[in-house]
Each structure stands twice: as structure tokens, then as C-alpha cells.
Length: 383
Ligand SMILES: [Zn+2]
Image 1 (cartoon, helix red, strand yellow):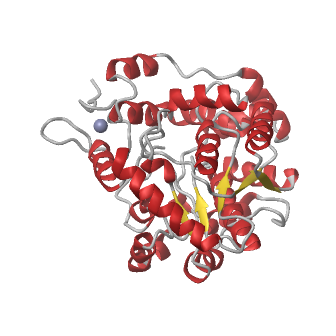
Image 2 (tube, rainbow, N blue to C red; image 1 turned 180 degrees about the vertical axis):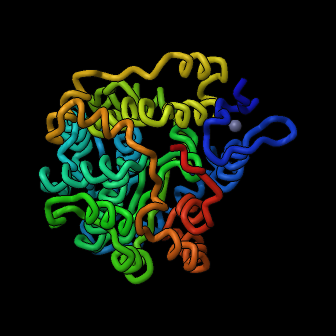
Image 3 (cartoon, rainbow, N blue to C red; image 1 turned 60 degrees about the horizontal axis):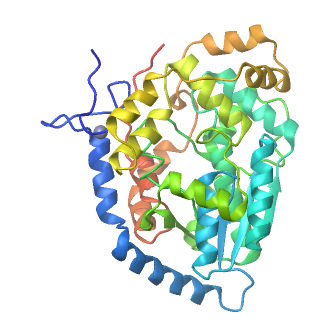
């Protein structure tokens, strides 16, 4: 029998999980620490208002106060809506990796039009981008989604630099999205470059990678500040979705992270079939911890097998130029981790005092400091 946290729904399949005497997991304790550090309610509102004043001050004489990343999903659409409500002048920024679902594209269009917000889109060359995804599938690691996250982070900073904006809002909420298990997914710009060098066939020209030099320029020299305002808001996912569709004509696309087709493939097919990992656990556990769903309800949700769309899998196979047999071979090849390839992990650990300072100055998220600058105790290779 697998041991399961008595408070949330994480079980022993979650990497680096530990339990206290009451059977409560370390991720629940992490949630409680974040909850104390980022209050909601009146205290959260006061922190938000102070932040808004600072951001307005920094945006004086400029066209925009803040960059807000948008994906067409619920979190980022809601964040943009609240940013406008707070009286800030946002520039919406979208990293188009050419795998958007139609609903996502329509959502971005409808929400921005209703809110009268400008959009800056960075589109990567689709052949070049698919080449990077292929390289990640070939090397045998789980982190196949790293290129979208690193690309998005780079594009947000590029837009801030281009438009002279100091602040960047990110639509993450630990209360609804959860805390991804330590050592589960790893990503950095050097890792992407080394994986691509190993198996890529096209030059990397338009992909917005984030190498250490860019990262330090944006955080330490230009001093761009990344803020997660949802941390201070009473953000209730189902209420937010209802509000967005009522007020902005926004449309639900059927599951967290599923607004992008490759992301949907990774969550619903790649991770469950290759690693037996159900990424829905993250979000459901978060909703339980923040009281937005009962534990029984969440257990009921995860007891249903993760559905996947066979047509989506066919589409991915075709677009990446594989046959079904080739994909099956990639799905079954030995498991590797980021440790098998050059990355910045050791550099990040060496620079831990610098990143502590950058976290204290709001230049990098606390989760980055915790996840990237400490030696990784796990995971043992599962091959
Ligand atoms: Zn727990």
C-alpha cells in the first residue's frame, strides 16, 4: 500500500517526499510557509496596494507599467484582468511556440480586446522549435517541456528590456497550481543548449534561450522584478473561470495546462505513459491544501485514469516527423535525467548566496532559489 499524505493527496510516488509524525507531507509544510509569507485577505490587499504604488512610480513617463505573460489560460487571463482593475497599464506578452490550441488563440484575442490591452507576441520558427522538442525526446529525459518555460521566461524579460518596463507579473499560484516536487522537472538555458547540440539538426536562431549572461543581465543589471500577484489574492479557480467567461468571453479548454497542444501531449500522454506520473496530482493537492476542494473529491478525481486524446498523439507524431513505432521506441528507451547532460546546476549551487540576495530583492522567485541552488538529493535513476 502506497503511503499517502494525511492532509493533501501526495503519495510516495512524489519525488523527495517526507512525512511528519502526523503523516503530513513536506510539501504541505512548504505550502504553509508560503501561505504565511504571502498572505491573502486584508493583509494581502495591503501588500498588493503597496506594490501597485511602487510599480506606478517606476512606470512614470513610460507607456506601460508592467509586463504580463499571457497564454490564453485561466491563471494568466485572470491576472491580466486584475492588473487592469488595479489601475496598472499592462503590456501583455505572449511566447508563441506555434503549438497553441485554437481556443487559446481566441482567448488571448477576446480577453485583450475586452480589456483594451496591447499585445507583444514573440513567435519562434516552428521547424527550429520542433527540432528542439525532438532533441529532448531523443535524449530520454522527462524535461521535454523545458523549452516552453525557458522560452517564456526569456520573452518576458526581452519585452521588459525592449519597452523599458521594470516589473513582470507571472500568473503562478501555489494555492491552485501547487508546488512541483523537488527534482521532478529540471530546466535551464545551458541544459537546453546541450540537449539541442546532442540531437538537434537545425541551428538555434529564433528560439529565445536564456543563457547565464542574459539571466544576470536581466536580474542583476537591468534589475527586472518578477512578481506573482496571485499569491496575494483570494484566487479561487472555479470562481475565476466563471468570471472570465461572463465578463470577457473567455472559454475553458478542458484541463489545466491544456491550452497548448504539445503541453497537453506532455501532461496527458508522455508523463503518465513513460514515467507513470500523474501531473494532475499537483493541482489537485494544491486545491485541497487551500480548501478549494475536499481531499475525498481530489482522491476521486485522481482515481479516474488520466484521459488522453489519440488524435492529439497522432498529430504530435506526424508534426515531429516520426512514425508511431519511432515514438513508441522513444517512450520506452532508458530513463535519463538532466544530470546526464551539461547544465547550470553546479553554477547555480555555487552562486547560491547571490541568488538568495536576488530572491530577497524580488528578482527571482523563492521557488527558484529553493529548487535550483541546493544540491538535489534525488531522484535515483528509474531505468
Ligand atoms: Zn501533503
